[in-house]
Image 1 (cartoon, rainbow, N blue to C red):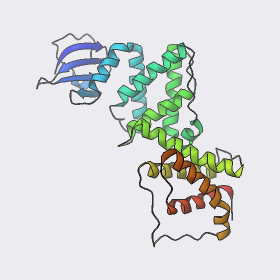
Image 2: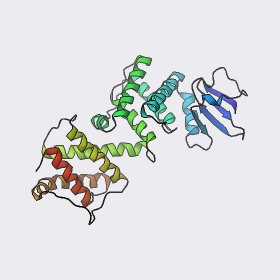
Image 3: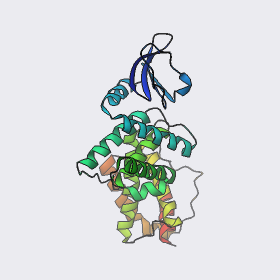
Length: 277
């Protein structure tokens, strides 16, 4: 490959041997390079070719975003890859770069976004949440600013969307919203406050997350003849109204009811959460 143009020290546009235009990202890959020079492809961490859906979007971002912000984003992505033990999808270079740039600008303007689901994120995605908190500390120290903690939730969304096949930020947010709807509805119905750090509560929220995932994919488990539940009729009686309230809420907000099997499975988890016999 040969250099077509330099975007910054760690990003350039090059032509492949087949004359295909590509964007290469890598630490110092463009340092001291000029158009026409050969590219040291061993330094390339990610390659966006002309067939990649987000190549043009990335080029536009790289032209607008300060190089310092781009370098910070690269460092955060490398840190995330190392902590997760796998490489995030290349789309993270676009989505996370755009978000971090916007977060820095919002902070400078005194604008704060309310994420509203940090408790759920912290429990359901602890690795990603710790990465996001490290990223905030790193950005704040580097830029000498104070981006609020709620921004960590949005960073987690971008990480999850780019580490999970067939997932995007919209679906990830929807899963979290439904998870929160389930937990909030049950807690509100029974008028209880739980220790959110307890294993019992964490297990309940985890069940709610997987229920939400099946729900948005329209893959709810249907009851079948092999399903065996040994539920006390009294326990069913104590939970049926709460589940009905939740089912109606989900149907109104998202246009889909819970299957009978999911309701029964949810009954088990509510009984465990509230110690209903």
